[in-house]
Length: 183
Image (cartoon, rainbow, N blue to C red; front, side, top):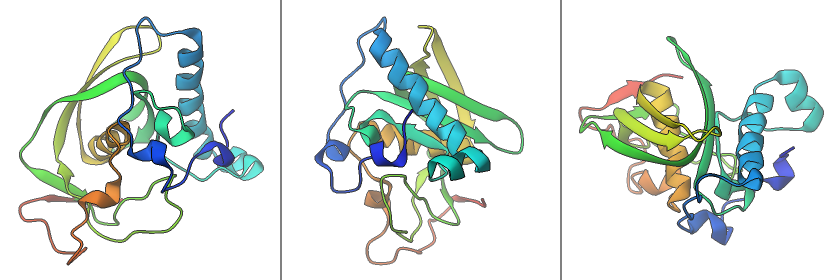
């Protein structure tokens, strides 16, 4: 089981590396890691389990955040329409909108202990492809908070942190034409 002690913090070199593709079919070890990533995110959202194991709540987790430089992510999130609970090998954004969106409240990260205020511009809509733990291709068309979450986690696979996108001069400068997402 992954705990907060397993999550590496900002400044660790693995967080800035481009993660390696996972050879498919996935090994039993890679499948176990993928399952544990999803288990952490689910458990972190359960108040009793989170308190018992001192888990910080999250909606996504990428393998580099547990110092495994491989292309694996897990997302467990609910928006007003549906639940998105996915653990994927080698996820990638195959298409995206020109239109941008951002979270009104800004983004956070389990690897970043302090709040870094500012708007993080993201694509408003994305299509993601990846391989699930059963070796099946998954294709997701996302918008809103799920789209932002998947982009955040895929960025971890490319050594990018959310705050890299924040306007350094004016962190709360409105992003022209972007959809504002309340959370």
